[in-house]
Length: 319
Image 1 (cartoon, rainbow, N blue to C red):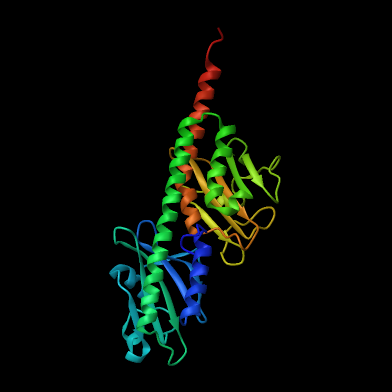
Image 2: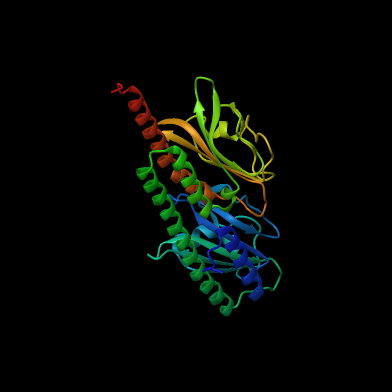
């Protein structure tokens, strides 16, 4: 499963299924550090008692954070009155097992946790060893995925350097992103900001449900308006799970997921990149948001450079 090359959302579900076949794991979740190491996200969370939003980030608290900080497996038991003394968030478990996910340098970047609530349901030494083996394999898969994404960012940067024609550049960027974000194969939009008219104007789009050919919308409208307001921030939204920002909401055809990242030229926001997923089985994740945010500066550079060349060429005297 780790080497199958599937996206991480599917990998977490497959990991859960395999582990649950071999040990009590009805309750299973994954915790990952944010890129700067200050926050935690829970991209996969299945629990009989508690729930977490996979698109939110949280302070580094609780036992999962402790496992990541120490880089050591932790087996905690209610039998030893552990949860009454520990920094535990949520309903105390009967047995709680957390295993760190570690990169090739030995630095922990996350953990996966399985816990039981059933009285007398305990984890054996053999089951702890199984969980640690699984963590090693999954750690490799996550690192392979990170390398893929880093190569995609570099590929887009190289494409920007080599291509001055936006009509060639935009489809090239779309193709690279679609290789890593499956939903992007069916929906990927780049819209420019027209400050004079106060509108978003699509300049490139591929979408299975909407036609952006003549579509324009106001700069304060929709989730794109939220992303491009203020200093600009990327945002990922899941219908029915994420609360829309106050004063903003989805426009057009309802999608299951929406992801947007601002495009900047210097400090000025000049447009937005968007992906819409109409399929619950093709989610957009915090990982995808980070990728889009990493790619956006290259696109902003390409647009600014191309427009400067056009201005220079249009200003040349005719021979």
